[in-house]
Structure formats: structure tokens, C-alpha cells
Length: 330
Image (cartoon, helix red, strand yellow):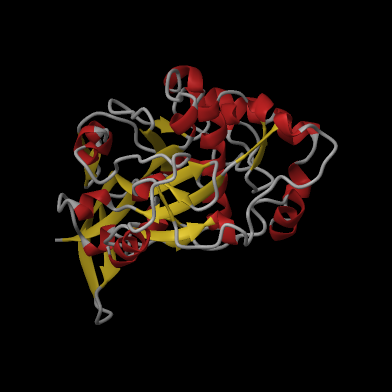
């Protein structure tokens, strides 16, 4: 927890910004505002414990072989579960971190402050948020579950992984286009209309991985920037879309891994396009989802009502759940 501790130590001498909310992450909410039933089902050798949905891309094997550090094949059984893996905060003010007590990072407020730039529309027609992407292996932090092969990315502590304020592509659709040229393929009515099918599938809890350019009922995945028309709907829908875009952009750059499926049993694999069914989201702040989580693109009519309010409730924290398939040695 060294980096997060240092960041917090650097900011404790600064008065809390009234425009930067405190999500009270490191408090009793760490147990009361988490959907613990969302850990299930847990699969071992193909058998499921507890109710819940298993993603369509999860492994169908019961037993597996992985090599040990000496290169010797080792027999194991497959295990799969939903793991809280990341924390994504979507904020209005640059460098503001509700996850770190409502303080601002020790960084300049001048350098690379995000803007929506110049365009032929009124600013009220657009929304823009920054994001901060944290490693948040909750089951490891709380000593609830640990196995080396079931921690494909190796993170064991709460740590800051990425900040959008230092990413010039996040506040520019044009720069975002040049880092993901496939955007041009999906900027047409046919590709956009296909997202209707993804929205319908997401409403049943089964987003379509093949339509990776769609975010279901939340909108279009591309461009991978933090700019979104306000016509996309309520704040939870916009912030959910941006949290998904952030994850998709990290996949595109090889910074997020595929952890589900037969090819991930012995360790995660780099996957350039977001496998949507591998992930689920639950809001932690301002109004926590404690009874369930939701898939990418699932309409906010099912889960988003009453989960935002003016002022401090306009910064949102999402817990990113990730399905993990692994090979546990016998």
C-alpha cells in the first residue's frame, strides 16, 4: 500500500477542497458498502458454489496443467470467481481523489488541466470527467482468498495505476482517434445501430463481446476519451460509460489483461479489445450498490435510480469486478 500511503501523506497537510468529496473508502464502508454476495458463484472443477452469473467466456475445463517455476507441468483443477480487482473514480475536478479522503494529488493544477476544447456546440451539451484507476484486490487486502495463479497481474495492494490528467488523449477526441484507428470503422450508422442488440443483451446480463465498440445502453465506446454528450442520459450512465472507456483504453494499450477463459488458466493474457463479459461494475460512492452489481451496458433503469445528487454526489466511484479463471495445483 506504499504508493497510496505516500499520496495520502503528501495531501494531509492540505485543506480538503469543498469541491472534492470524501468517499470514506477507508472506513466501515469497506465492509458495509460492498456487495459480498457478488463474489458468487465460485466454481471449482466445473462445479458452482452459490448463485449468480458466470460469463460466457469462462473456462469449460475441469482440470488443467500449468508449469511450475522449474518448468515442470503440474496438475491442477480449474477455479473461477468474481474478484473485486480495480477501483475507478470519475471526477469533475482535475486531481481530485474521493478515494483518498477528498484530497487533491500533489500536482500542478495548471499542467494538462482537461478541457473539452473548441467545437461548434454549447458547453452545456457536453460532459467531461477525469478518471483515476486504482488496483484494488479486495479479497487479498482482507485476506479472504489468495492463490498465486489466481492473481494474474500480481497486484496485492491498493495502488494508483493511471491518471487521466497526464493523458493528452483523454481530453481530445482527435488524439484519441490516432491511438485507436479502428474508431473510423465504427463511426457509421450500421455499426452504431448494432449497439441496440448489445443494449438488449446487456439488459439480460449478457453483453456481446463481439460488439466491442458498443457499451450497451450507455452509448458508444469510441472515441476512447472523457468527452460525452449530456444527451446520453443521467450521470450514472455517463460516468459508467467513461469508466468503461477507461478500461477499454487500457486494454488497447496492453495495460489490462484478459483473465477469463481457457487461455487464462495459467496467467492472464494481453487482450487489445475489452472482453466486456469478463467485467461487472458496482457503484461505491455516492450511493453504494450493496445487493448486486451490473454488467457493462446494463440500463440504468435497473440499477441507477437515486444514485447521484447535486454537489458532492456528482463524483462517482465504481468497483470493477473481474472474472478470474485459474489453475489451482492439487
